[in-house]
Image 1 (cartoon, rainbow, N blue to C red):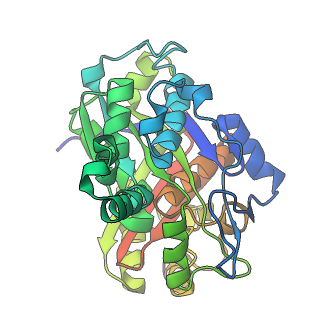
Image 2: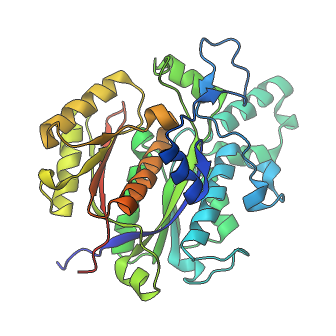
Length: 365
């Protein structure tokens, strides 16, 4: 078997609590000003907590225009806006949404989201029960299926290669990237649009409370960060700007320390790296204390305790399935500042999903 095709990141689009667009997101990260603020999306008077990483002043019309927005839920709007910015940043499309390179059949989509339709389901069911099924808009039903955001996006941007929705909880964004690596290496498509998206809603807020994940210093959040992934030879051929290379990915299903240990080992094996070659770790955004303890122990067993770690939770909160995409976006900023760094990203879910991703600056040799 020949060498695996090298996969690089050539575009980034972000709609996050700390800023919109690549530069807005990166500047927000570097300002170190927490995005945790009072919630305005729903009434929190009956809860003990009223803060979260909410994206305030978000106006999807800026990116998408006004047509058809009333039929889309918030997750889809966040996703579509981030993808518009990503395609533009990668110079795959222009401002008019015309393709500059690649045909629609050559693009694929992999989205990590698990609770992005939770509010849509709740609203649809509530209206069905209170008003009767005859009075529920049929347009609302389309938003109650898990792949609705990805489906709407594929139609909007004319992505025809393939469309996959990954719902592995906290690991979903990293797993969406992992799936994209396989599709690109197998030459199913020439470019994958991949990342994560989740909205902040009362139903998800209640879920976090039920999990005991909200406290005086731990809050849920929302957002979407999307990337353009290509085979390196294609990116070089079209003279694309390259942010970094994905050199290793590992995934396991095991709800204990050994599961994340193995995921990290698999990522290191694929990257052909020794643990001592990792320069920084970006921790998962899971707010659950048990998962934090597992992550801490797994990193200690595989990498030791001397490697610098970045924890985005105090700044961005817990955006569930979108958290991994924010970790990746953060790693690309670090690499842009420190090109010699090799970064490990970890993510784990209470259900047992464990994922690890390794990213470094591009080397053409």
